[in-house]
Image (cartoon, rainbow, N blue to C red; front, side, top):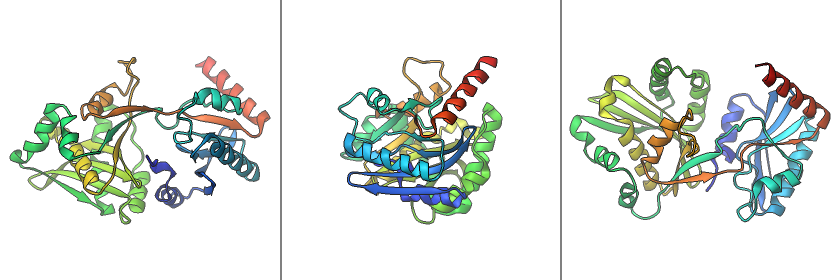
Length: 311
């Protein structure tokens, strides 16, 4: 499964946002790393990277990341080795043995929910809750239609629904400027698609998906609460999956989910929604830091601990 955050399309998005991006590769490994700032100083961050075919290749990628960090005078390397050849190993033990430390928080989800698109799409539908299948098959009877868009101007539809959802649920969405720039970068070249549900020509829900070579990521979605009873978000997501299948993709990544033993987790509601489409949970090693300037990294960690105690 190819991770979108390690693709040239994501590198283009980051550069369009004015960020400095580094891409390197070698025998059996590659990485996309972004320069970021935090209270410690400069950080070299590889989201869901590096990608490696084996532990040996991971070690080579890590050495290249450290060299890059030294060259750019970064305090530490932050990584999320989700596809680093660790399948037969205890990733935590392996990473600690190499001097890495768990980051204070995971920057990308440690748990995700994947729907595989193998076989006929009717097999994918069979894995869903009956309600989801029935809505997908019958919602057209209520006048709801769906369309896919590669027009960056259509991002305003999703932004409008995100504003409504944020006001209703009290959360802070990513900025309009950020999502507008992501859309401008991804939509024209087909690396992203907007899916829009309409009732008699009026938009009532929207979802933004990102595509890698074999995986579609369900990245952002929101709907108009006025038409909540139609549950258009469900057939909209099934439409997104059907389109991915038609394009020859192998997986749909529904992104982060809550741990099963945490029913009060802030993602619990989203998690129940995602699991209703069938699929499987995947677990990643999480976010890890590799200090390069150990003195400054130690001071950063100490300052964090003191701040947390004072809260």
